[in-house]
Image (cartoon, rainbow, N blue to C red; front, side):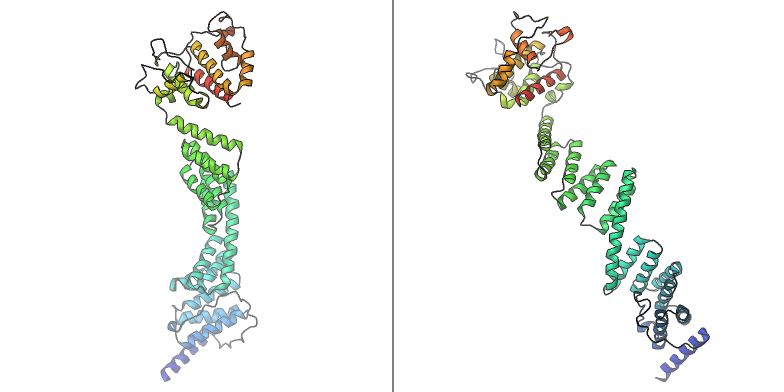
Length: 451
């Protein structure tokens, strides 16, 4: 007891000597001047009770508004015990009370050098950083203080407010950056906003848009899909997913994505997109001979048969008595199935020797015959429309007179608008048909069939 008392006396004497005169602790203020400051409590292992008592007294001076006396006592403690980091935090709060945020930050950092999980210093550092305009770093300090001492409930609301403010600032600045084409900056700001508000689906959607515009479609798909999963009714996110898949020619995924769009917001345009994606998927699954038709300077009978059978399948029904038809030269041909379908539908014929001659070049007269027969097949389901084509089928064509055996077929093909004339209104029966002409012709037939 004697030793401890002597130690206490020595401490007080040194403190008095350092301060120049004894100080009397003020009565606890009511209310304290800086109630939101977190008291830098000191545990008994940091020094004797007398030292801790002086530390408490210094805090009372500070709360009474006397920063000069508070600094004197905190500084005296540190001269006796440089490792007494609560006093360093006390100096930080005293500097902050004088609105010297930079000095306060330095003191809090010194305190944290002694204990990097010291919640009062972390909270004070957050205050100083916030006053210096370093909001991101302030939020980190406040969150670290809460992690070190979950009982600091007064900080929780401040953390929530800061998160909201940061999210708003990040979103506004991200949008400005995106509008200015600064995509890397925009992405960083959106990612920061998401870190602060991970449940906000619109942030993922806007991030996806920026990623897509910057050319990073892999990241854009991830972000857009996240937004869509969080809100299955987010049409913009769903549409972006569909558009990215479509641009990548991932037709099946694009069709599924457009179907999700249509489920959320039904519309004819979206339904047409779904059909187009399925058609593209089917096209990609076709043999090379079919997929390269449009690029070919001429087309074969096999290619024309495939075009007609694939694009007009719902309107090509087998003709009566076609079950016994025999085609002897298409076994193993890439278009064998479609050749048989158009022959059975009566749209294209075999030759007298039962050959189809799939590799023969298609002429305009051959195409006109196929068009005329297809129009007749369509007309069985649309008799009024067929009557219009038939009644108007008397055009004047310089190189195909009405007495020509091919005139009826050519006249119907031209009058229906499916085929056109060439130079000087001529038809040119024997001119080879290009792939693009064949595709355009069959597309017009399909459009008429859908009327």
